[in-house]
Length: 279
Ligand SMILES: NC(=O)c1ccc[n+]([C@@H]2O[C@H](COP(=O)([O-])OP(=O)(O)OC[C@H]3O[C@@H](n4cnc5c(N)ncnc54)[C@H](O)[C@@H]3O)[C@@H](O)[C@H]2O)c1
Image 1 (cartoon, rainbow, N blue to C red):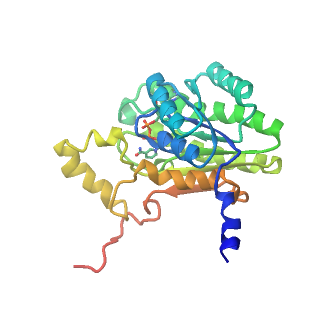
Image 2: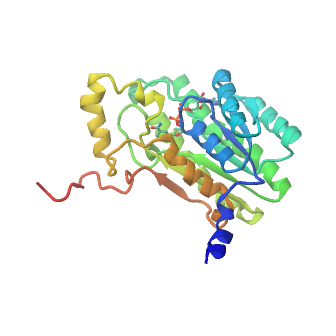
Image 3: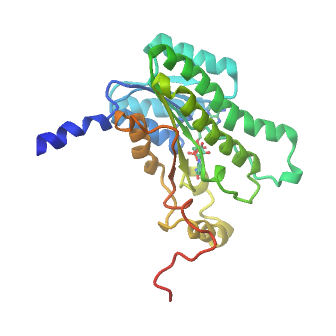
């Protein structure tokens, strides 16, 4: 029995795979957690970010686990930098089996009727066009190699409206979700799988910074928690297992899936009560 169980397990690891995680700067965010998780799962790592200091820190952390990663300073909204990143990747590591797109640019909440065109364009440049540019380069490499897998980080905001000044971000994420489905169908016959993880409100340093402000703690946080049936904010570590699964051979027939990792947020009827027993 044990040998049967053990024989089934290795397909969940990433041994022998080369993985690139963009947005992996060490700021306590989701990309940082996934990059470290992939290294622990045995992947040969490449990491990218536009934050050089954060990138160096993640690089050192992965190095302490074993092999130092290939660290590439890259702004994913710049097509030249993205092409150069994949060129470096090909020269240094030969190929890429797994791409995880994580970066996120959301400078401030703005009401849509006050939004400047330049700000709309900048949000789409990183959160949508940047994902396309990385997917395009990865697809070229994966087509030449005969297969691979891409994981886009989407958002609950790409499925349902937040209604709090996040419209360009939500639109970008909705488009990333549809890009995921389109690419999944178009490249399935080339043995390339494309999926997305859809986070909900996560305790990253960005959110942690608000926890001490009375307005956030007393008014905003209770509303956020009311939408999270597990009764807690997500943690960056919550995404590591699902990201390993989607990249691994265990998910070899999982393609075009938008997988919420949200504690039940998207499953919940916002108008209903999820408290039981009623008191
Ligand atoms: N944190 C949440 O509550 C939450 C909720 C839903 C979805 N998400 C999604 O999860 C992903 C990660 O979120 P996070 O909160 O961990 O983000 P984060 O801000 O903590 O980290 C994002 C990383 O992307 C990097 N980055 C930003 N612009 C870049 C660019 N142009 N090129 C390269 N790197 C760039 C940043 O330097 C940073 O290291 C994002 O796609 C976000 O939209 C997050």
